[in-house]
Amino acid sequence: MSHIYKKFVNERAAELVTETERIRNVTVIAHIDHGKTTLTDSLIAASGLLSKDVAGTARLLDYDLIEQQRGITIKASGITILHSMNALTRSVEFSLPPAF
Image 1 (tube, one colour):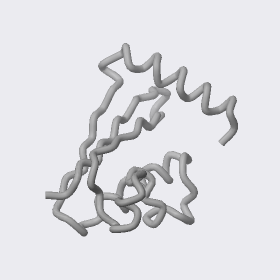
Image 2: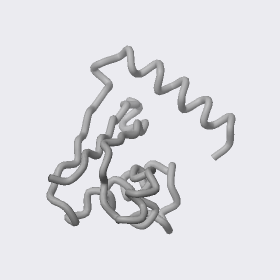
Image 3: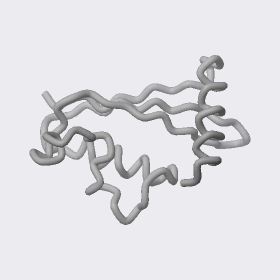
């Protein structure tokens, strides 16, 4: 992803934050080893921010080295994805808490 594109996305996301009717919050909650990280990787890949070839194995939201080594989510993390449908862009905020 180019630096210019990242800047555009960040600026557009910043605009949408003030338009609360366009914000959707999604938290993926499930027991350990039920596919939370795989699901979020796949959603991120569908948005174009991650290659579909590595979706499910990239563990993008498990950014800590210990999380990567152990294959589990230890710290909550999140990502904002811009989603356009019917000429309306929404900010979708995904959060991935640790398993319980």
